[in-house]
Image (cartoon, rainbow, N blue to C red):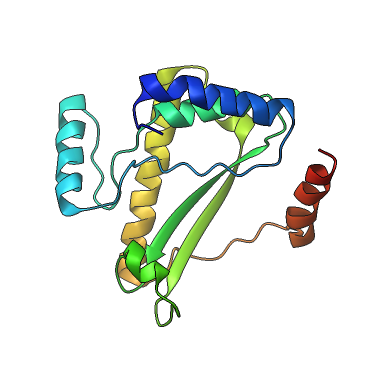
Length: 178
């Protein structure tokens, strides 16, 4: 990826078309912030929000929406059923890529908040609607991370009944038919 929508759009649509036509079970990971969090990048995001007239965040960067919109609009009427929204908190502060690569990875606790959203509930039809929807998710992430900083918790655990075996075996069964 070139991180340039004009250059990447055709490649993305070709790849997505292949996934859809073959109904390939897939997880697509999209980092809507586009980069690592730093105080300097947060300041740039705050300036961007001020110029755009939207509320800034304190613990996440302003999301980039175009790639996410392309992903959801391409898969909305396909075999993909859900969007998973992950919010990650590091109990002892952020972890660098180099720290993650060091083995053994001990003594650090990572907390993950996951929200499963039916893809049909994502308003991808217009740029304005999806932008508002994504920004609202990021305002929620900002709230969750503030809560985590204060309490070391995302709040009460809410478990949805889920069969882990289906999570692993169903995609494998579909892949074996390809």
